[in-house]
Amino acid sequence: MTTQAEYTELYQKRLAMIEDNPQYTVLASMNQPMTDGDERVTQYIVYTDIKRDDQKRKTASIFVYTPYKNVDKYGHSKADYQSQLLFELNIWDHAVHITVLETLGSESRLAFFDYQNLGLAQLAVTALLNLIKKYDVQEVDGNISSFDRDKFEKITHIFDKFGFTVTTMDAEHGIGKIFKAVQSD
Image (cartoon, rainbow, N blue to C red; front, side, top):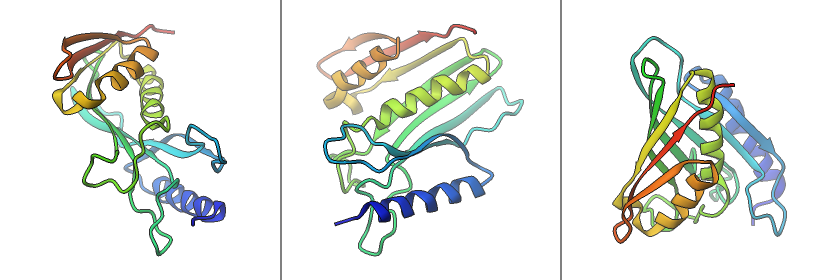
């Protein structure tokens, strides 16, 4: 059984590694080890690989890492991140297209623990909405594909929660579209 001290050590190592890598920028973090009964991860790092430049289009990701249930028998992290939001930024059109919102789950052949229902995808969407303010993004869109059909209701709930309009194209196969107009401050 993993102790809180081990989780904290993994968290600190991963945070230092991300901060030392010029490819990444930390967007949010919290280092409060989970206690029994917690429904959301309270020890996490949200980071991105996007860098501002003059490219018209840029593909990037927002990653969410937690040490929770992420310890191998040697005390190392099993995965570098448990949730990923892949998006394309078009700075000239002031738009973002979400390509993938994925949280490792028991269905994934890469997963060793079901990271669903811990708030990781919500952390990624929150970070994206905060990040796009810096890029003067005026709209965000994306697709929900048949790859997500088993989790279609859960995914639509997450986007609904953040004010996206969700249009169901084919509920049986889990296909839909999302859209959000972003208000300037």
